[in-house]
Amino acid sequence: MADIKLLDIIECLSGVYKALDMRMAVGKVSSNEWHNALLVIRFSYSEEIVENRLKEINESFPEVATNNFR
Picture 1 (cartoon, rainbow, N blue to C red):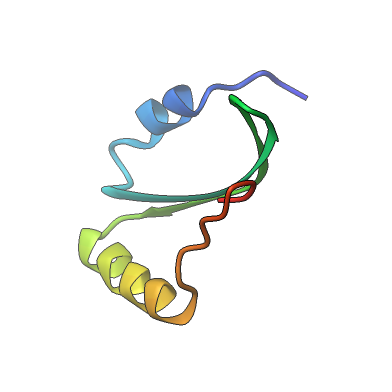
Picture 2: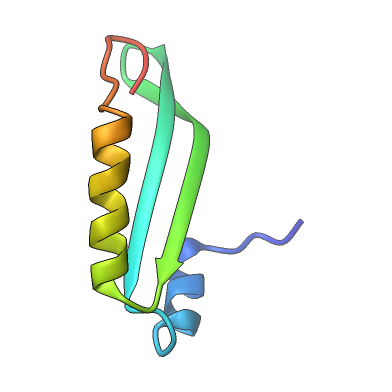
């Protein structure tokens, strides 16, 4: 698997996509360390589409924030 950085992808796609929505679920593994469990990235050519989708997601799935999971 290639070691690709998100910034590289964003720079390549900046002429096509105008909005980016990133969602991440992380788990605490020690007092000062968190590990990514799931990452979803949505690219869109329209900020309005992303804003509307974000409202729908936030209404359906409220933010989860505990001591060990976010």
